[in-house]
Length: 111
Length: 113
Image (tube, rainbow over all chains, first blue to last red; front, side, top):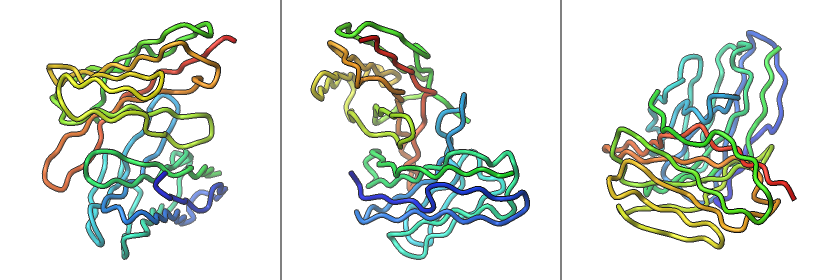
């Protein structure tokens, strides 16, 4: 395993509030990713990072921002949570060979 | 967004049977990956394939990188109850700093003991 932790593991929040999810890795992997997983949609990439302070958008980036100030941590922020952002969020890391290693996930409910 | 065509969507089999699933794409990939996801957990990498025609095994699992580089196959032999879960394929398109995977929608496997 890649030594990936996510926090919190579960969160319930209200519409309109900001939310930050944290991903922490101990493997010194260059690449980090945020996905959301919803029934019928599989894994969809939100944002990814290819180095400290280097990030790019994925296919479902609207309403999300990310930051990576050090190799170990990749933060995902929902600026103003909406019910459509209720989902399970996975962080993953990778070395660049293509292999990605996933964290345990965060279940977010927006009421 | 771009997706791989993964089939079948679901399978219900008897313990001891062999299982086959596959992924196809209109794009050429440099790497094919197969993952398994158990309920409530993150996907776990099963097999990685890096060369066209490559055949790789991991215990009872065998995967192949299609010769056209547009498809991949996963076989599970002599299935057991702990094989239950969702299996995902993913392909890597290399482009500069881009190391994004393209994903299939998964094959849900149920095993009847």
